[in-house]
Image 1 (cartoon, one colour):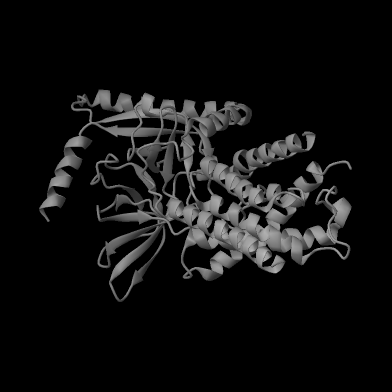
Image 2 (image 1 turned 30 degrees about the horizontal axis):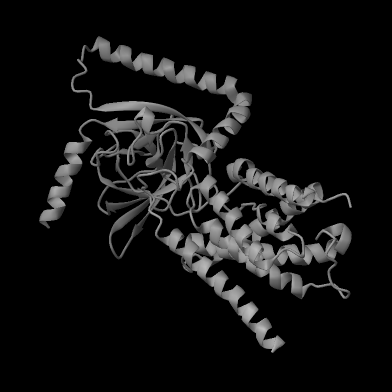
Length: 168
Length: 269
């Protein structure tokens, strides 16, 4: 129960940080930071995978409502939830995941988290920016945006991951 | 048998993902920037209220600065009013009304940017009203709810604004290419026109949305397309989208007449 409340809190905090702070900052059109996907990344390993899909969709939909981009982040959140399943499988440690251990750097190490996070971030950003632009005419511009924004998102996600990580 | 079951379970998961994804993409691609109802945009009451509360906290810091800017604008308007009075031009047939609003949320680094403001249908806001700021044109109202409205700024790929060169009146349309929030593209000016760097660009007044002559920006650079003999003019915008605190939406009292006659002309074609 306490665990569920904790994840509801993560959901609210990450959504509000995304909508009220990150989306309002403008450094350049190349720099976009998306922290809301951290919620999907941090869901417990034993979470039902259908529930993960629905939560990804719900988070994306909420971000869309704040930014008037109906469908964009909903589809991306859903994609992240789908990809998470395979990314976790791909980077599974030798002795597997333990169900009572939160998916964080303390339990699985910085290298593991970095691989897991950057894979999901790059797939998410490619999806968002190509969908938003919807043309391959500006492919270099879009790829540059993906590159710069992925690094920005990685930094912000790392920061919030460390802030929100459970003490255990 | 177990393998088969596993396969079906995996397949069901994939099917569900594809179905939901298709649903999201349908929402995304069928999304019309001009929404009559604001519930599916940031004008909805939940996100609007949260953003407004938060903006109240954040903007508290810049209140003094904002006050100063408003005072300056007020003084400027008083001076102009005085000039009008001296020339004793009677203000007849006031065509435009202004509705003021504060910005509660604004994105500027996206491809499709949006500005949310704290005035909605109750304050008289309507879809497709023109929006200006202290320095010049900001955009067009794209959706409204009772209390909030979303503005499609010039820096949105679907925004088109009819503009002209203040110097000689040659007109065309202003759009944005997604690269730089300070620069918009002014096209359809024929190649024989004398365009100079620094020329002012203002609204043409041909659409019912903006009055004529509202400043937009100035010519930063231009190039001529030799095959079509038209200019592509890069306009540095006066409005600083990074730092926009309040706006005025423009209600055109004659608009209904104009747009209904527009519709008639279109249906004749």
